[in-house]
Length: 127
Image (tube, rainbow, N blue to C red; front, side, top):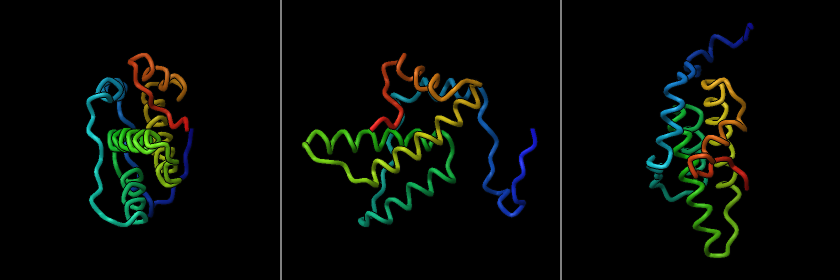
């Protein structure tokens, strides 16, 4: 297979994680810390997380998924609707990390979600 990519954007590419690293990340998900942002502006917060998803590792995207799953659950526990930005960030981080894990494990993203569910963890951005 041949993939064309502009040389100017080469710095944005990173190698795919190995099969063992992917297995380890799935196993570590329950113990992962969340990613905290200390700024006060909602738009700056969204920009921070989008940049982390774009430039960070698969682990970073997984931590963001966990962060926003917890935030959305907390908002819903107060019978309120979570901000659209929360759902958007969760979806982006989920898609990015699931795609990378699926490539590393040579399975579909649905199979990766099933591996999380086998461990009793909800992962996908099913909102």
